[in-house]
Image 1: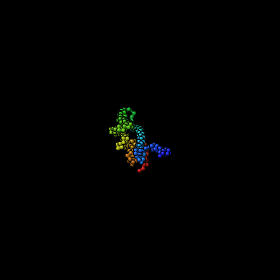
Image 2: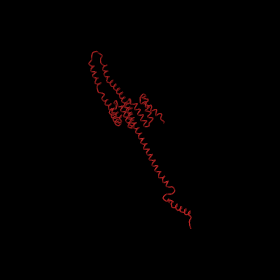
Image 3: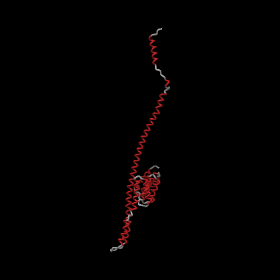
Image 4: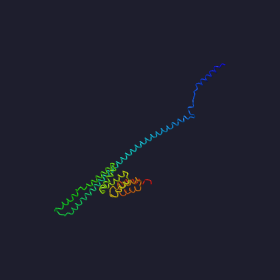
Length: 279
């Protein structure tokens, strides 16, 4: 039986299409879209790690910035301490000059007293008396004798200790101040040495020794010009140790006993700040 040309053309087209159709093997791929979920699962840890590394870098940058600020603050504090030491040194030098002048005038007056008394006891006559040269010669050695040598030695020891403290050699300053005080606690510079010993202990963060040294100023040298500064320092120590009532007591004492002094002005400001603090 003969087939029509149209039927043959249709059959050949079907065979050709069937031969060109691609063969797809789905056995190599999991079903249900698990491939996309696996890709998401793999990319998620990578994103978290990247984010963590980014935050770590930012934290390191912030730490470096904070370290820089800490160094700046440390340098600023060091400069402030140097300026404070210089200020105290200038104040102490001026105070020493005043005390030296006062003590010098007292020593001159005391040395002249015997000569005056001797002169007053002389007989009132126009004739020269042999006792006059004798009185002058007796007084002269007392005036020209090197009585200031021990004082100069103590002054040198005191200035060396103070210079060590001003240069930041706190431990050396403490040793030298203690040596000066142990040798002669009644010398002209003992009260100042006792005060700066307390300052040195306070700089050294030794609160107990600082309080002991400052209290020794009040007990041993109650008429010293360092008493107002000592009371102020004791009040500041009580603030550091959170003992507000005791600090107020010291500040009030400075204001009451030494109203015209520089420490009284500082104490008034500190007392006002403490009174304004909430209970």
